[in-house]
Amino acid sequence: MKKLVIGNWKMNPATLDDAKKIIKKTRSIASKLNHTDVVACPPFVYIQSAISKRDPNTLKVGAQFVSYEDGGPHTGEVSATMLRDMGVKYVIAGHSEERARGDTDDMVARRVKAIVESGMNAVLCVGEKARDEGGVYLETLKDQIKNSLANIPQSCAKNIVLAYEPIWAIGAKEAMIPDQVYEMSLFVKKVFSDVFNQDQAMKVAVLYGGSVNFRNAAEIIKTGQVDGLLVGRESVNMPGFVELLKAVDSIT
Ligand code: PGA
Image 1 (cartoon, rainbow, N blue to C red):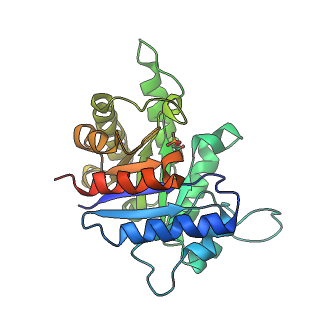
Image 2 (tube, rainbow, N blue to C red; image 1 turned 180 degrees about the vertical axis):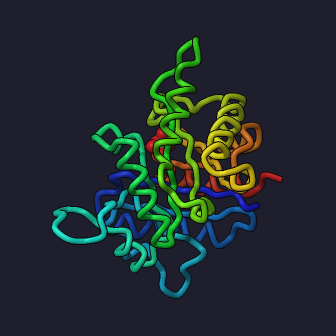
């Protein structure tokens, strides 16, 4: 299976000109990779310029957020149908920054449902706020995953990517150590298997996110045994992201 690297640009960069530069560079390096799929998730306003009608596959485009409503009086919202119609292939749901602004598991589950039912791939973000000696965080994480996948039809499981992002490692100095990433990737797969089944869990892509950069990316994938990465800051930091993609692509 190819590795999957998803760039979550967050609210960056400040101008369309800079967004175009990042897309151009990212697409150019993505076209040279043999073992890695690359997805860029810019802010909504840059999505149209990020999508290439001629070559939609070299660099797939994702969105960072979506409404669970399908239209109507919802000021400021964007629907899954609108995103799909633009050519968006992936949508992030349940990012910790959205959860911190009030997204509940129930709302996240509704977003995931809207995304997969409209034929796109949902990047479901899950992760614990902090760790405790007694391992209570594992129970909390298990509930978070189960509740964020509530009412998702079995047939849509193949359109879900699980992004494990321990909140304490997001925007931090250091990523989680790769051995722990390995333990957690097994854990989230097990919960996915409880929700759907073992067969789906074998196929689901699990990504790690949280302070990934060009130095630690390859080791996190190799030792952490994850299928890819969800990258924040480094995805808009051009020399770094190019190096990161090269490093990931050269994993044998
Ligand atoms: P970071 O963000 O790579 O800047 O830590 C990751 C994320 O929030 O998805």
